[in-house]
Image (cartoon, rainbow, N blue to C red; front, side, top):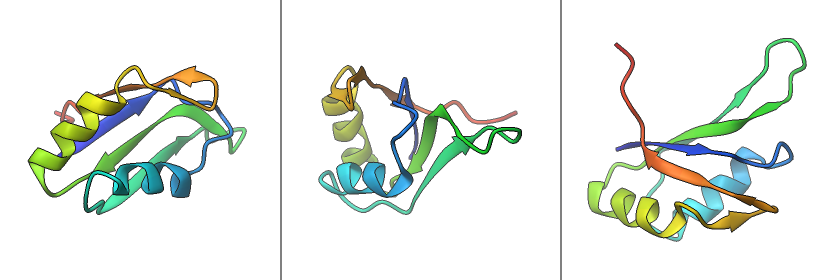
Length: 81
């Protein structure tokens, strides 16, 4: 399952998100979205967790949780059309 992680502190790194998500199970990938002009995070990321039950548990536990001074928004990602 692909999940969206938003409202992130701009200092958060992909490796930190991967560590958090690995507490819930296997993580295939984490992609922090970067601004092309400034080469800095724009405050959200996507992660791919192959096991749907683990992904749903991560969403349930992490949505609204505080990390690096900000309340994360974690939900199932909406596929591109």
